[in-house]
Each structure stands twice: as C-alpha cells, then as structure tokens.
Amino acid sequence: MMLRILATIKKEWQLLLRDKTGLSLLFVMPVVLITVMALIQDAPFKDYQDIKFDILTVDNDHGRLGRYIKDGLESGGQFNIIDSLDGKPITADQAKQLVNTGKYKISIIVPAGATAAIVSNANRIVNDISQRMGMPVSLPVKKVADSLNVVIYFDPAAKKAFKGAIHQALDNFLTQVETDMLLGRIRHELRGKDSTTANSADTLPIRLQAVGLQEHSTGTGKQIDVISNSVQHNVPAWSIFAMFFIVISIAGNMIREREDGSLLRMKLIPGSYLAILAGKMVFFVGICVLQFYLMMLVGIYLMPWLDLPQLVMGHHHGATLLVAVGIGLAATAYGILIGTVFKTPNQALNFGAISIVILSAIGGIWIPLEVMPEKMQLLGRLSPLSWGLDAINDIYLRNGDIDYVWQNVLKLVLTGMVMLAVAGYVEKRRMN
Image (cartoon, rainbow, N blue to C red; front, side, top):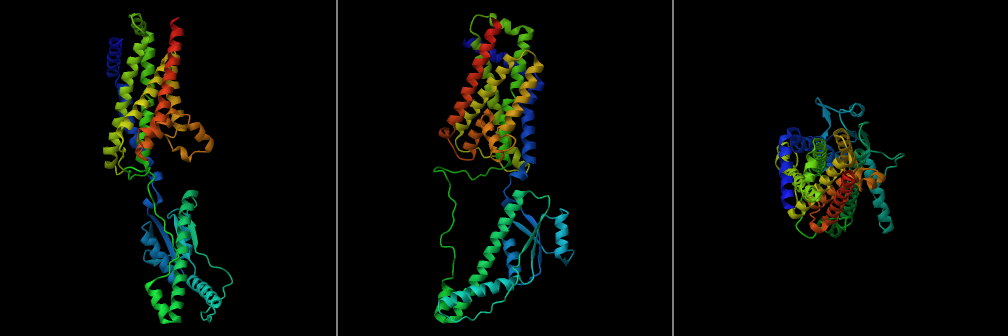
C-alpha cells in the first residue's frame, strides 16, 4: 500500500510540473490576489485614529471657546485645522460650500457669543450653588433667548458610520471644554471667597473624574500588539481562498485520468483504491500547506515594502501548522469530491470555481462576517472557509493556541472525511 501511495504522489508531482498554468494558479495568482486586496482595502480597515482629517473651522466667537476647540482638536493629532485659505479667513458660507462640493469632509462653525453663553451658564450654576450654601450671589448672568449651537457640516457623500464617529468625538470634546470652563468659574469664585479656600483650590484642583478608564488585555499569556487591519485580514483570508481553489487542479486531473484510461490502469494494479486516494491527499495537502506559508511570507516581507502593515503570525506556530493542514485536507477532499461526481472538465471546473467564490463570499473572506446582516452571518458560519479563518484569527489576533482552534480544525477534518466518503461511494457505484 505504501508503494501505491508513493507512486501516486510521484505521478501527481509530475502532472503538476507539466501544467505550467496550474502552477501559476496555485502560487503566482494568490500572491497577486492578496497583494491587490490588501492594497485596496487598507483604508477601510484603518481606525479613525490612524487617519488625519482636514477640518475647516470658522471662529465667529473670537473667545475662549473657539481657542479651546482649535487647540483641543490640534492636540488630539486626528485633525488638521484649516481656518484660512489663500491668506484669508474662511467664512461660514465658504466652509459650507467647500464641504458641500466634497473638497473637504468636515467643517465646524463656532457661533458668535458662544463663550459668553457658556460663561453665563457657568455663572448661573455657581450662583445657584452659592445660594444653596447660604452665600451671596455675585456673578452676572446673561439672559439668552435661544441656546447657541456649534454647527458641523459633513460632506453629503460621507458614510453614516463616519459621521457618527466624528460627531461623537466632537460632542465629547465640546462637553469637556464646557466642563473645564465651568470648573474654572468655580475655582475663581472659591478664590474670591477667602484665601484659605483659594490655597486649597490651587493645590488640589477640582476633578470630576473620580474613577478612571484603563484598557487591559483579555489574555493571560504573552500578548500580541496588533489590530485587525487590511493585511491581518486579507493575507490569511485570501490564502484560504487560494488553498480551496486547488479543487481546479485536483478535479481536472481526476477527470483526465478517467478520460485517458490511466485511472482504470491504476485500479487494475493489485491493491486498494484507498491507497490512490491517500496518495492524492498527502500530495495536495502538502501543496496547500506550502501555499499557505508562501502567502504568510508575502504578508511578512512584501506588505511592509508596499507601505502596508506587516503580518503578525502569533506565538503558537504549532497551532498554525495544524490549522493549515486542516484547511488543506478539507480543500483537497472537496476537489476529489468534485472530480469524482462530475463527468466532464467543464462541469467540474465551472462548479468548483463558482462554489468556492460563493463559500468565500458568505464565509467572511471578502469582508468580515461581523459587518454582514445577522442572517448572512448564520449562513456564513456553515462555510468551511469561515472555520479556517476563525481559527487563524484566534491564533494571529487572540494569541490562541491549540486549545483555541481544535474545534474548528475538527470540523474541517470531519467535513473532509465526509466528502471523501461520498467520493468513494460514488466511485464504487461507477465501478460496479
């Protein structure tokens, strides 16, 4: 049996070497594919914190609020403040027009009297506190008929998620500015009451935040300093897609073997047909694993050369190898099933290519499953490509080991065994 397995591996190797187009599909095209997909999806995968936006600012207030807003936005490093064009200050109408035409994505207008309104409101709050404490009311309060609003303009073509994120960031910042100004009025009032309180206020500034916020890692071992970017998603995802595309080579070879009679001659040799299948499995699983690691090298060395993030493979390389073998086994078994069921190359190749595209589309290869509708997510979880990608993400992004991935690997292996059993049943019926 071992000789039949080795002979089958040698035969498949010779067939593969003769098929130059097949070699290109297996190794060259995946490199081009993951490179192109990582490049075109780099921007959508970036965090908003990684992107610097030009923001037009019009300060009609000329007070502390306008200065606070500009200084705060600049200090955050996320916005490039533009308050003049061609040496002239930007007007509100001009900012609105520039954003409406799409030349700029965001504009913020600080209305006249905004600082006075905030100071008046702070004075009212301080007076109310003083009155409740039995202290004399002394700060002037201005009666404002209508509340003033800082106006934000967005490019009409801007996506809803983009608007929501930027709007939330600006809203939080404005709240911080108003709180700082309120606390400043309170400190000023305390300093005016007596020197003892003033010294206490100077040495112990008023803080509203008694409980802070700190991010901790969810794992217990050595962590990976990486986020899900275009490279971390696309390199493993499209590598799995390329591994499953091996069905084209496998199915084509099997149908040619039947057509030219070589399969019949192999069956006439004493021994079990399972040895032939085992030889095919060993050879093509090895090719799939080789494909996988070649794509990982592309992510590690080629992507940084293209000004993209470098692929981080995690710390558990044994688990990675196990996942690669599991994916290769499922992909090879699928190719054998297609090559057994279909009778002509056109049928097998068309069905194989289209089915892999569908399985990859619903399985999170094109876009992450998390952004799909809920029903599509449930359907996508049934795709073997989704199991492989989940296992890779567990290792690369969650620092998982074999304990994290064994369930997905088991599903891949069992699915492969079922497909091989079906292929064996179909071939046995054909022989009879």
